[in-house]
Length: 334
Ligand SMILES: Nc1ncnc2c1ncn2[C@@H]1O[C@H](COP(=O)(O)OP(=O)(O)OP(=O)(O)O)[C@@H](O)[C@H]1O
Image 1: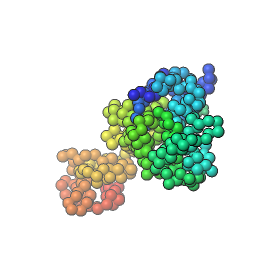
Image 2: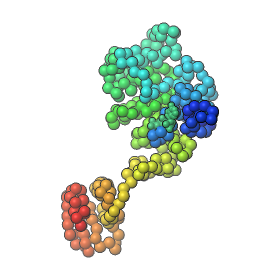
Image 3: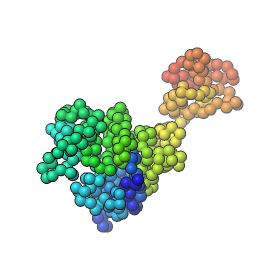
Image 4: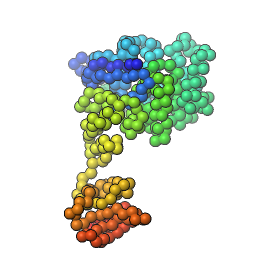
């Protein structure tokens, strides 16, 4: 089921002649139960897009709609029932407990004084439980780790009981295990509760593995959308992140640093040892090329019981080392 649709949406700042257009005519769709990661280099407009969709800043043109209703024309309270938002520059109330923060998620449904009824309290409890921080329910936010704090904000978004959850860089400032945990939690929320989750991130590797769809935003192109695999097949990452000496390797889904090579060495070998040797050599400006039959001198990765790196000249071994550090030193001497 289609949940969110953005249609010829133009985003940016200011009005009229002095408007700063960040992007024009963006189109995208999001379906129920999908985790969508919004990716793009610094300054391409991810936060601007997210803030516009959430109604925190006006669109310059076009529309964003949810289940047929124009999000950009909703009252704050109605919008809060449609989409829950977790921003990086969120206001932290350090003295509030996890339970109190998550309780704020119920505010679109409570009266003026924000008093929670039994059903609200149950929803708050379940939301905290789903985020795996029930043991921190009575803890003050100031006493939580960054990862736990993020989970508390996600629990608040869950308690808001919306079809969409939108998050701006929820994994920023977290260490690797915490990033994975937050992504897994969001993945679970999308697939188990049928909510649509849209998040911006710089964690390309995690997004490639865990997102159902990616939205790629770049300065040159409009918004490219699709499964990570389709975008890899179409070679879209290369054009988007082609910048500042990095290269995107479609086969591994990883970035390669572009090196200036000043030497080439024919190498015979394969497997993990060869990959690591190639990486260490590249870092030192040495390009490894596959040994051809006619090469008279080459380096060979040998695995006869013990790993060794041997230099051959006209079929004879002229030097041998057992570590990458030593073979590199030998290579630079030769
Ligand atoms: N309040 C503002 N007024 C005018 N221009 C702004 C404002 N905020 C951001 N911009 C500009 O809009 C463009 C997009 O910024 P935005 O913060 O949306 O990018 P981003 O992709 O989220 O970047 P990052 O990955 O660094 O967070 C940038 O050129 C930025 O300088």
